[in-house]
Amino acid sequence: MNETLFMALLAGVMGGVHCVGMCGGIVAATALQGGERPHTGILLGYNLGRIASYTLAGALAGLIGSAAFLAEDLLPVQRILYALAQVMLILVGLYLAGLNRSVVRIEHAGAWLWQCVRPWLGRLLPVRSPAQAVLAGALWGWLPCGLVYSVLISALASGSALSGALIMGVFGLGTLPNLLAMGWAVGRVRQVFGNPLFRFLAGMTVVFLGVLGLFHLGVP
Image (cartoon, rainbow, N blue to C red; front, side, top):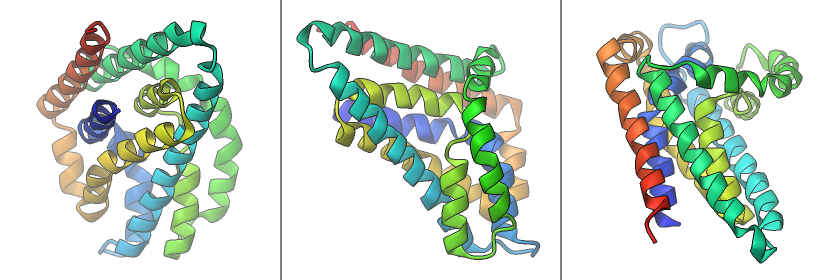
């Protein structure tokens, strides 16, 4: 379990390029609030809500997994889901490195949920208080994202609601430094994360995490 949590944390940290691309726009908009300096309370509130949604999703996935794995003969399913999570992580890494766009099609599969959530988010914008930012972040946390999906499958394979919540919560904390930096230094972070070499190195690191996970799957 500790190894899975560590991998989830690293996936969040190294997948920061993807996080900034997916969530960076709203982070910058809500943090600045039309001013020249970022509003730290709003920025923190947004990320708190986002991580809370990840944690809730992880708990639900873990709960579903715990019901599925009650039968001893279904245990191989757990290993299959874990392997699928690593393959998803590899696809995300290849996408970040600019080598493959398969993950984009996977993200489109979750578009139906986002279509339901987006109108509610629209009612909260523009965000004017930290409390409002928490609600906006909680809704934005359901944005279709291949990186989130890969870790969510790991939560499903964890076999319990608590383990699933921990995995997704730790992953969310891993994404926090990148998105906080995005809110505090919008232009500089976009410049760094937009660098093709930086994106390639970050992507290949994520690929390495997925390959390492598959290797551990085969170790008795």
